[in-house]
Length: 311
Length: 269
Image (cartoon, rainbow over all chains, first blue to last red; front, side, top):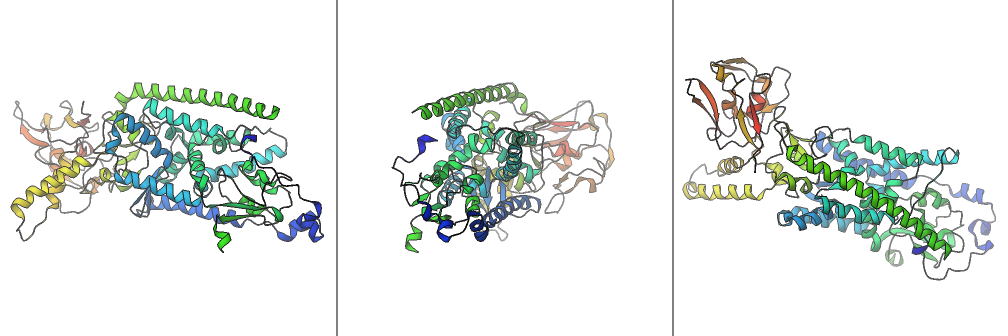
């Protein structure tokens, strides 16, 4: 994680009298209780996530032509949408095998549309706002955290750049075996298809993954393997939509890092680390809003880069 | 510096594990693909209409399920791991529910975004048929090119070819059939070529009384270019499969014998 740290010199650590609750003359507990920490964004996000997935389900079961297909590829009222990592594998294999010329215009439109949409929305927004595995894993996290707290298990961490090793690896595997290898093990696609078209034995794999995440390493798949998330991470590098951080409102309590799935994107909340008075969370951020809900000082917020200056 | 090198070492170590596990997955998939591609498609599991060669199909299909959604008779299903096909790819089990072309447009092929089901040949065949129709029928009062277009499109489907098992076929024994071929609990549907229905109707609602069984010939959605009733050298009226057979499997679905006396064999390319 040291590699990605900002090379700029950090600002001097915040003086004690500048810390919000001390400024107000109350204790941290009182301050936190006063500002409350609700679950506003989580409720909104879960509603969106569940609605989208239910829309998929009822589009098939009730024969409504609203959102057909699955998360691997779908059609929204006749308009195609393609998962970008799937499309990329498809392109790589097709270019090699000669299938490329057969691919349809709908394929190209679908892949580009979704790339553009998630570029605007922040890349990994997909992970926390749409992905059904993320939803399951969030509950797994709760259990995992509980077990760690009770000292029943130890936390195991790996390097977050592993995702890019897997990203490259899965792409190479696709090319070498001439098969969409990743789609065979992809819990997102498996869950999505199981919900829409009925369950199968392959769900055991997803269960095994979930158990592994609960008892061994928190968010193992999302954090270290998933090439879909890695793709979105790259797409989200220059996204206008994201989470901003305002130093003057921060009390360095780091409650945000506790709830964050990818705490390294919030490296600047540590006392004496921030290099600017305003920071944007990195592209690994899933824009899930847990930190926004958790922050007692309202130092973290959604933003559209460049817009808040105009408004 | 010290912290950096620990990080780097840890990263390299886990990368090595990652590459190792990926290799294992790759070898596994590669091996499975090699041993099963040939046998993957058998008489029980057919690929939907317009499927490209199995070797290409396996990567071209992104397992989105759009073909499954669009099929009005729900003939196309997802392969689970127990079907022995590549997980998540579409297949048709014709004995349970055949593709009866009652959608009238081969829309599963048209909907496929990655051309695992390849639409262009169908489109061209349809356009050609319309052109031909226009030459002679342009001035007609009830000008309607769609039936010829659909007919041309469905006639070039090649999911396989039907083959009659002469040992069990009722007609080869000179027997007739009276009743409902698959029992009253059978869920399959089809649109009989002789009916006026717009949509497919359940097979269990159909009643036959044939002196010599030829339900397969009667229900064939393609007609006399695919299967006919013909006298064989023993003087028995038996069904005969012709080259126009598309392998849609309606004959397999409606065959009244316990084990179907007609099966779809994959086309060897």
